[in-house]
Image (tube, one colour):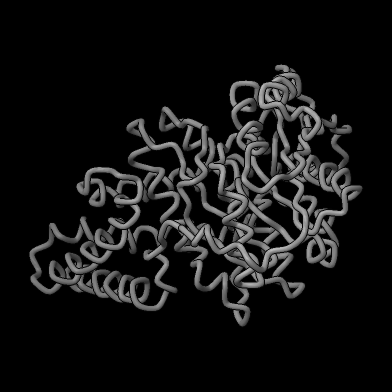
Length: 391
């Protein structure tokens, strides 16, 4: 048993040495603050496309924030069969902002087989926007409030780096106990999976994006076959990034507190629902990858604090070093969310929660219930359609 504990501790230490030194310095992700005074080089019109399904509680301020950008642009809102008056509230917000003529609201057609609801809405919005011949498409979620310089800063980054897709990981809501434990960890894990430096590297295959706030070059999207090429994707943003990179597109992603998500996760159940909806899809529905994930999470995050209880000095030393590396790298995200530094010690608990949510995601896939999104079941095993109504 002592030999096994020492072996696991050594593996844990090696894992964290790799993550700290050779994983694209993912943990150094910083808030993007480009020089707003230097906007030379960007050219071309922008049209924003916003898919919305039953977002009455949030849509008003979101639409207003897009209409009040320092870079003027039309906004196409695609109402995806909402039953709560989302479209009317969006129109009222545009009228209040004095820009009713800039907002275009279209009603989504019925969801065809093989499409996910969000991508189908976005596709219709993009088709509508094509009449305006935009050089760029701003793809935004209906629950994200944007600062007035958000689009200008995305455009600045795109022009200076000659990128085809630039996206901000917007600041997520982080006030409840569940949010403080899990939201910084969610962003930390995302950047660990998709290191921004690797995403920018045109020689590598790593591709990722944050779907709440993306600026996409229309020409590159068309060259890749449009959203129809990824119509069944559940994780739409990263699928879009992968598509563009495969067709020669250059990608950039970074943190930004200029735009903030209005979506609240007041309970642990709320976060679990969000994660389990897509986690097993991320693993390509592979039982082998699931087992590898369970083993990897236990060795990487759970073993260090547990092995501190052993009596071997070498095991304790390696485990303490691993937990120190974990805590120090995670503290950058804790500081970004302006939490007490002590929260950096809770990453093993957050990892345990996300591991449970991933297993639950697999169970839901296997039992045929899939993930629930706005009254539709996504990613259902043996289903002929990507999304089906619930109830």
